[in-house]
Length: 100
Image (cartoon, rainbow, N blue to C red):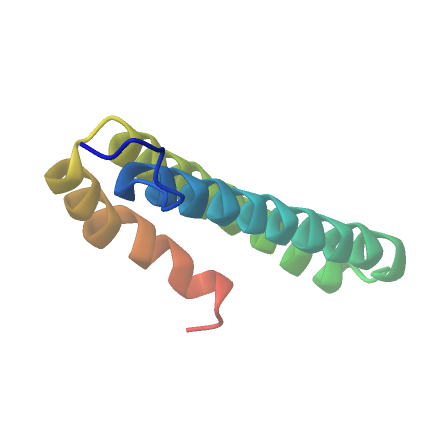
């Protein structure tokens, strides 16, 4: 045993720090997309444009809801369930948001 405290962080501390940074980036991305959608709401004036914007917003809600479920499963240590949900629901929900 060392007579002093090691300056190196423990692996779980680094993982926790990385996860916090990831969640901060996700929150920032959500704010960026929300701001962009708010701008579009002000600019879009045709019925067709309004319909397209409504579809984008619906697709985004489905993707974010699924993504949030995956994150919760991972936080709860349910890696297999998270991977299954990611492939069966989250990735397919992301396709319309990416224009695929």
